[in-house]
Image (cartoon, rainbow, N blue to C red; front, side, top):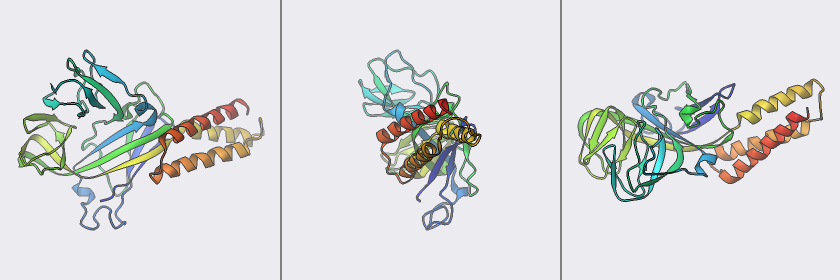
Length: 290
């Protein structure tokens, strides 16, 4: 199944709104060509990354603690056990609880991704009801508005949940939906994922689901630019300040071009980030002179 997605903000920019826009009418959508239906989806996993965060990773060393729901990659150190799992260089880790310490000798870096624990609290529907996420839930602690940036969104859906023992399918990705699960001598907690490497039993204390489909989407969120664009247009309509018709048109067209490039997976992160900075500068100039 080819999953499609949309990411916008609410009317005051305080929430990010994620939607599964796959639908049921395309040849490779829900319920078509042997695909699962909405009712078959047991859980989801969604990760969000801002370009400006990923471009400047944070390094963690021994004595630091991992930030809950933030994705890390191990960049150095000997094999170590963290929260019941063996971690070697190149391993990805998304801690599902706070206060987990970095082992002695380890070095880790943030990837820029943040995976809020959604699980089965929101599931896709034909009505495409959005998932509302606070700025904290997309990794923007301390922010009251969704930041202007180009976002990467990884979306996964899980099906065929089971409890108790079940033989793994080698090469398939699983997620713990509730409680814990053990596989190949390692313990996984709700929200954690793993890829089976053999047919050893997965033993689920709660529920574990099998990944059915995934998609990666790119989105420009620009609440600051759009809201102030409307404010400047309103000022122009009252006859105050400089003529802003052409500058506003240019800003709108440039923003639409960036959004189209992202929607067609033809995104340049550096160029998009630079253009958004320029558009913010243009908006600030117009705000100061109207």
